[in-house]
Each structure stands twice: as structure tokens, then as C-alpha cells.
Image (tube, rainbow, N blue to C red; front, side):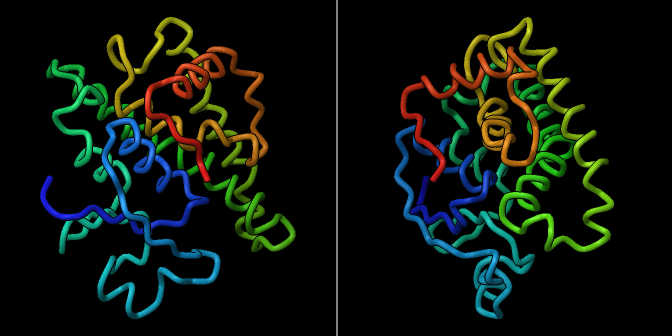
Length: 205
């Protein structure tokens, strides 16, 4: 890796945490720059011009280059490491689970956590309140897919942890803040314990 690594983040974000967890498991040092998304600190003209024109975090800064999107940043850190399978099919399968996380899992589970834990249900717009049940159903469907897989596999891909596990761990382990019940998913609970026992593991702030 070339250049100092700086993570532009809000510590409350699971998408930011997955990058910190990846780096910690690989022993890669990261400098941290903190932003408060609740106060619009990623929407300032300076941030939009100099960090991410999309106004979102996390962003991994590599020297003078900026890499938005959490799973892309995780891939940058982990390429060539034990967190990325050597087998071609397993690498593709890992990406499949990472796409699943961003398409099926995060938009439901992370969104409900943010709305209920940080915004507060009383402060939601009518449109947001109307989406709560659909978000909950979508989140439970994603957890059910994970539970079925983990009922017969220790990890999402192959015989050891990969970026698929890291990406799905981030919001799953705090999903109860969004009203989901982890005890309904015993295989997921066992997997969460395996993740937290891995070398280099760090907790979410």
C-alpha cells in the first residue's frame, strides 16, 4: 500500500466500522478523521469538494487519493491477505455476499437502526414511518438467508473468515438497536461469537 491511510468516518456507522475491523484484523494502521453526520458535517462545501462529492462516509484516503464506499475500501486493504480467498470461485462468492450486504441487508437493518436509535421514531417523516414495516420485513428476510447458510457453514465462504464475514458482521451485531431479535437466529449468534474471537478483533466505538 502506498501513502498514509486516513479513514474519514463517523464511529457510529457500521459501514465505517467494517473498514476499521478489516484494518485491525490485518494489523494495518489507520488515522481517523471523525465527522458527525447528524450535524451535516459530510455535506459541507469543503467536504464535497475535497473528500467525497457524494457527501457520504466512509472514505478511505490513500495518500492524496480518496476511495469512497465501504466494501471497496475493505477490498483495497485486504487484497492479497487471508481475508480474500485464493480460489477464483470463492472470491466471486465472497463478492456475492458483499453485494447481498449492501443490497438486501444494509438498506433495511442499518436504516432501521439509524432511524430508531439515532433519529428517533417521533422525528421520522411520514414517508419514513410508512417504510418501517417493509424495512423490518426486508431485514428479517436477509437475516433468515444468513441463518440458513450459517446453519451448515461456519463462515460465509470457504473454511475461514473473509471480507464477506466482516461486511455482514458490522450491522448484524448491532441489529437489535433497530428492533431485530438476535436470539431468533442461533446460528448467527454462534457466528458473531466466532468473529469476535478472531485475532485483531476490535469493538465498534
